[in-house]
Structure formats: structure tokens, C-alpha cells
Amino acid sequence: MEYDRIYVFGEMERPGAYPLDRSLTALQALSLAGGFRPGADRAHVALLRGTKDALEVYFFDGATPGIDGLVSMQPDDFLFVRLSGAGTFRDQILPIVQSIVPPITGLASLVLVADKLNE
Image (cartoon, rainbow, N blue to C red; front, side, top):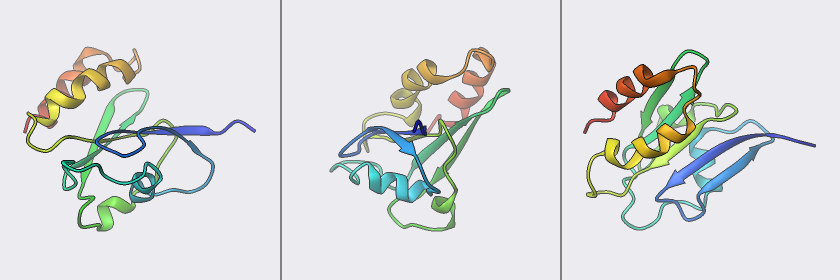
């Protein structure tokens, strides 16, 4: 049986693609990826969700789990955990985002994402 996938990248013990074979929250997805590596920015986890028209970005605190981390994962969702103190979030994730953004969203969507991630 072929399952949809989610992606967990950045400062995780086991980054990569995972099958979405059951209901899963963002916090559970982080757990699947083996938890945070030392130096990970646990307080600012990004969930990127592509739609046919845009790329949505949600942030939640993975260090102090709350309601924001209980968002249900959807097929092709992308979680990213940056390295703390290693530049801006945008600098670390934008090259990855550029490779996963569906062509229909285009450059305008990347510019909006870059503005949201400019910390």
C-alpha cells in the first residue's frame, strides 16, 4: 500500500520523509524524526504547507508543547527545525523551500514566505 508522506528536516536526529499512514500531529511528527539534535531551535519550529495557490507557514514551540503543535499533519507537509544562533530562519530554510514549492505558487509566494521568516 502506498501512503502519502510528510517531511521533517533540519536539526532532527532522523530527518527525512515519513509515511502519513495515520492521523498525526506536528509534535508527533517531530517525535518520529527522533527528537531534536543539540543546538536545535526548539522554540521556533516551522510547518510549511503548500496549497495549489500559496505556501502557508505556521510556527509553533516544540520546546513547550501547546495547542499550536497539535495541528494535524497533511500530505506533503514540511516541518523544519533550524540550528539556533546560525543566522536567520530565512537563510536556513529558503534554499529548501525553493526546492519544494510547487511551480504554480511561483516566485511571489517565495517572497511572502521570505518576509515571514525574516527573523
